[in-house]
Length: 248
Image (cartoon, rainbow, N blue to C red; front, top):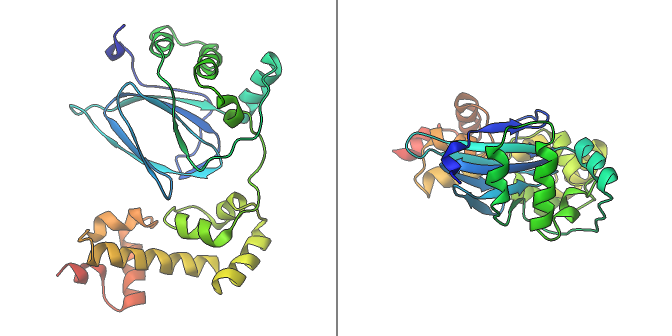
């Protein structure tokens, strides 16, 4: 059995690469190193390991090449596929409660064997069967089709403000309509979501540059800005000087 014979592949419907995870994602790392972050906890995935990234969460990851190579297998377990599988095999699940977004799975020789075979329409179904048999309780995670319930807004936003997602996403993930989210946000933070997010991110950036010695060009993505010029403009507008001045 030679893992280096397996090549990167992607199985399942296309999903957006944004920080919001709309469907469960299976990741099998072949070469390199992957580090994930979910707002409060960091995770590391090494070659030969695999995990599930749980849907309805915010997460991001960075990849590190090994000998200038990074290879992984990604399989999307979308709700439509999971409902069909559940109906076909009569899978029974119960409630699952956990804050972990990246779930490291038990290793089994059946996984590399599966991907050494020719990929076909049954690959995703066979993979799911293997995972369910080798990971007790996984069905409670994958077959939970409920929407996010209403949670504490203050703690959630303070933990996840670095993620660059739309206000509508934050509303959905905290179990609120957009209108209710804005109303609750005003009551909790005495500010609008947009203004609060910008100022929170800029103050975090100030700390990282001033106290941690990080560069503005590295910080702006980390705290949720899309481009360096917008970050620099907003930083100067709030503090009265550009972020580069902190490095002098």
